[in-house]
Length: 224
Image (cartoon, one colour):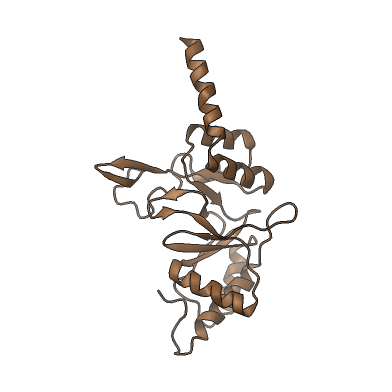
């Protein structure tokens, strides 16, 4: 019986090694040194295939949040990452933001598409952009709460649709599957060597505020 169990365990590990999510998690953790952790994922329930795996039946972000392990367990350790996604090959991939890891600025998907078009016309260079069916996240260089507070204080107005993912936060990365749908790269990470290039948060926020306040009708281009 022990030999049979051992053979099944070995097969499970081989199968997990072929998981696209495992490959993505290893790239983030070992090549880019971005701490990652598996999300809670989805489960079937009463004919509804997109029920969150957590105990909350009214979860606002089904599948797309940490639960067990918790966010503080996020790591760049290859062995831990392999163990997680070998046992849970479909678990969403979560990036723990802040510290030495990227932070992010997110906004509703419709507003995100508009903002990227404005950035392209203005020649603003962006880093990786993560797209979900509901929100887009622009990855930026790490920033502290003090840095962010000073930046926002300098603005006369900041769109209420913006959210900031810094220390203690997280972002879902591709190719995760969450309740709202598939997560993808709208702008994939670009790198010549080492970690992907990231813009400063000030560059992104200033451009977002400018794009919103310069709408011809006096409204907001980031409205949704």
